[in-house]
Length: 164
Length: 164
Length: 164
Image 1 (tube, chains in turn green, orange, blue):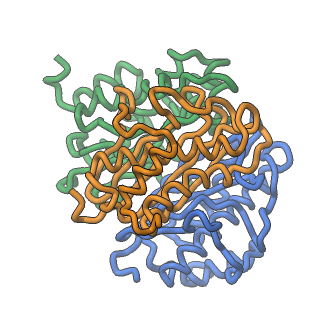
Image 2 (cartoon, one colour):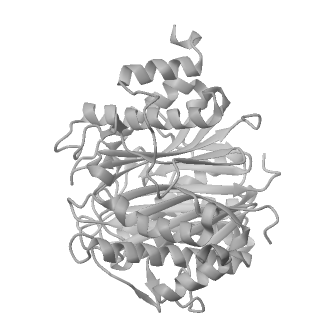
Image 3 (tube, rainbow over the protein chains, first blue to last red):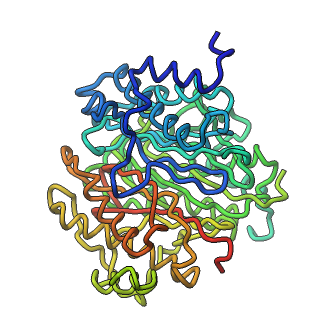
């Protein structure tokens, strides 16, 4: 009965399912911040599907990666974003909406099923946050990504004014 | 005397000129929202130049598409964005500014006239919205786009506080 | 003693070091605006590393450009952004944070050190703005950029409510 679980419980269950250790270091390198809050908006840096210090499913979608792997990678980027937000504001119950996610897919020249790949991220947000997981989305196929990642996802979240 | 027409009238005239049916389904698929409002900001998902359920001018700019076609495609994405905003807030008179548009152009390896392509979107915004069509812009050439689209445009609009 | 200099003094010193003339025309073409303010947010258009009317280090990173040149180009885009912000709000002391920078790198098929390139922009922001130069960042490798530029950087800055 996933609908009877809280957002944070669904987050923990999804993290476990993806093999994501929420206590793992989730840093963004020394040159920028993983996230910044401004009033009731939270900007999250572009996240590659890194787990346990290593980019998962490295390579190019349509060449070294198939659609199912790319969707899984997108889901890992999404859960990393939720982990960062949860760490910053205490509980995912404080998220009002995801104003924008941008999903960058490192694709081959002629791989056009980019929306299907991005659904791997969208579905994690929707599953964990319910109605608040509603988001606008931009999906593009790029030529390269940092650390040979197949996917990068960035986010802008809106918080309830009461969020700590 | 286009300056004596209202914004909404100019929108309708431009939609007609582009062959865009404003009563056509303008959805964004089931996994995300076409647009989300947060206070007086409106985020619009990345829009490909779809009309009547079909991506117009599919292909790669500089290969299957020339500059004029790409500009027309960019204009269709722009008019779709205006249609979504108008549907959400009732009248384009409620738009204060376009804070950001990002224009993604699926280009060839050596096609560099990306700004000229993006002008096809910018000019629609400026023509319809007048001074409020003023916007910041980022234009990049990408490797692929969803559904083999040549163009994708996303937007963040600022609304007057009084907008419904 | 760079820490005893003001932000604006560090900006002027950095502009000089990069050979950037802050009195040079810093326009964005006639079809869009270089920056737009909305309440206490400032959106800055995508900036290529243009100085004295000419794109610096044109070409593709990993092919015509090496890492060091690409970092320098990213720094020029960053200083252009700071010049625009300073011109708009009078002093960089009014900047509270950089909510988001997106760094687009025109890379080769297999150039993956994109984060290192983006550090060339991040380090300029941090050096000039200190703690307020903290930012979230998205870095992607794209296929083409306007005017054959190697780099494009866009920004969203948060201002203190008191900023003019």
